[in-house]
Image 1 (tube, one colour):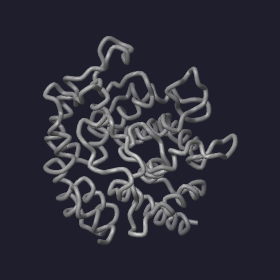
Image 2 (cartoon, rainbow, N blue to C red):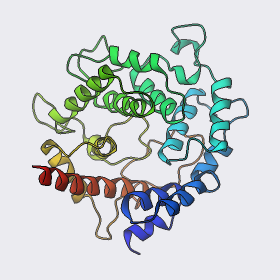
Image 3 (cartoon, one colour):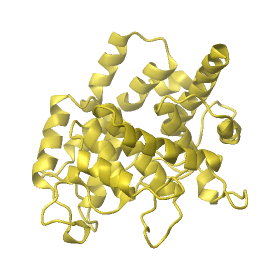
Length: 312
């Protein structure tokens, strides 16, 4: 089966995004497919397994873990945040969840107010903004926690050097927040500094030695949880609508070389241990999630690069 047809013939969460980014489908066709995300497949399953008290639960895990990472998976489906089923779930979460005492810096904090670690708060900010609950105080807190080198680290202030992991989480959150509210110059500036932190390191190398910062960065994982990898970084730059920078060339080459002869990408890793429901793909097997993300990154690099060349 043709790779794009393989994506289209799948869960609505994947097929509608493939239609939008990789085909010439009409807006009406895309909207119709997107509407099915809450009715069948992974989107419907996530909504169905929410606890009646608001959070998502998983045996042996504190509620914040399955709640945060299952909600991030829901966001990855591209579900319409205005869908009544989604709004109902978000309202239940907002009313019924509060962070554990160890994560609070005031007596009561709802889910969308976040906690104290920037890697987690980046995800919370992205969720709040996407699901129509943007939190200005959380966005400004993250901006204030930016380190001198341009990134973020959950170990700060003990550590003065940024983390790839924390930085990508915060960048995704700030980007989603900027979309949801009137742009603020200081937030846009912080995001640009964070992007530069990654670009200076060509997305995966140590600035000091040029060595690969961590072998896991070269493995394409999904769900990502808080973990960084090259595909996640490239998908962020694509999502931000930035023209390809020459410093992403090596990372793009990695994407190309990891494509299988059948045109698909494998699932190299899965950080799914905190999900409130089973993940449908297996490590080492062809992955629709990775294939979707890789193809749209390649499309971004090609089309944006051509537009940039034409402009010059």
